[in-house]
Image 1: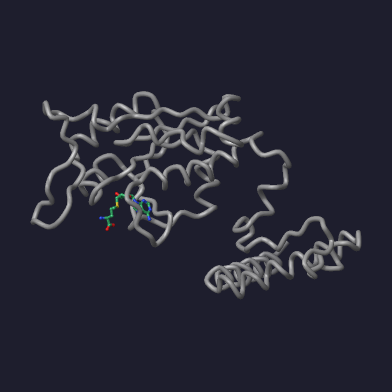
Image 2: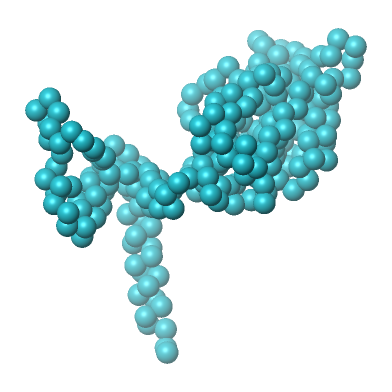
Length: 247
Ligand code: SAM
């Protein structure tokens, strides 16, 4: 099945952009995902092709009109009938690898890229739009955020990544950051590759990687570490409960 991506944007020329090369570009050439780019302005209803208007209540900037957005989403729906509709917004739910995995296992995605001050609020409830943020930063438009989200999905599509394991061992997949990597030369500017990685002892290497992954997560991302610890406690107490069930 081809993962169908539909982008709604005022700047269609930004796509496929980086998604046209390397892994994502090859995957698209191989038919593993498809891209439709919709110009929101094509759904303007006046002769000036206006897509925005001043904010109700006053204030700086311009707001994307709900009627124009609604018509562009309805058009996208005719080609991409069941995919979730996502709007890139700084106040949206922060994107996680777990959500990326869910999206990648589905039929595709319709993504609304904002500009100016953003979207008329009414569009979200009216079209069942999920808001997603790529971090606590403000971009000038939703296109780079949409490209990020799509890139993260595409690499997880079946057959896109070379080594079968390379997806599941990575950062965030087990709730932890990934362990450090090294490659030749063994010594560089007086720094050497840790002895254990040269030992050939696979069990020892796995143990070292697990420990490093835990140390890095604890030091760099205490928030992730806390969640990981919480999940471990929960699954251990779940297992204890199961053991107590009469057999
Ligand atoms: N007025 C908005 C606010 O303060 O939250 C910022 C609008 S921003 C200049 C224009 C567009 O860029 C947004 O509508 C959204 O589509 C996109 N954007 C900016 N930052 C983003 C982020 N962190 N995550 C996802 N999209 C973002």
